[in-house]
View (cartoon, rainbow, N blue to C red):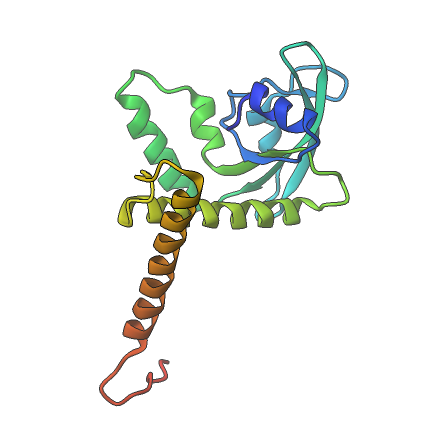
Amino acid sequence: YAHRSGLTHVVKAGGSFIVRIPWNNVPLENRQGERFDIPAELEQIDDAQPAAFAVQFRSADGQTVPCRLVAVRKSEPAAERARAKAAAERSKHGSIDIRTLQTAGYVFVLTNLGDEISAASVLDLYRLRWQIEMKFKTLKSVLHLGHLPARSESLARVYVMAKVLVALAIEDLVEQAESFSPWGYPLATD
């Protein structure tokens, strides 16, 4: 998750991370140790052009963790949907910070991958990770994969593998059903 303690743990273990963060969740600094204002910096991004900012955060023990904030502006319809969703969620809890509405118009992730990985590639990697997360969310809800009835590791593996096989079979059947027609082939569309 996007918390300093978890991200620091990943780094200390020699790992890399790409994680989506709320604008106010991880206090970021520029590489000179000055506060990094995410909403203000995001305003500098050109339409449809990913950007990367060299930032850092401080671990609980005060050590700096160098990383990059990688961001891209959302399309205007996607930004409007995100702003409406943020406003609806916050209306339940009182007023909304204007910076929340500002940052809803962007997708931004924090990563400690090096500069040799472009901003666009970081966003592509995050997109892939997001698709995997969505697939697991579906597996958990539709196939009840969130609860393992097995107590031993070997039975848990068998249970999970069986559920994954069922998921793959269902996906294959759905794909076949979507392309099925009485005449046996899909029609070309204009």
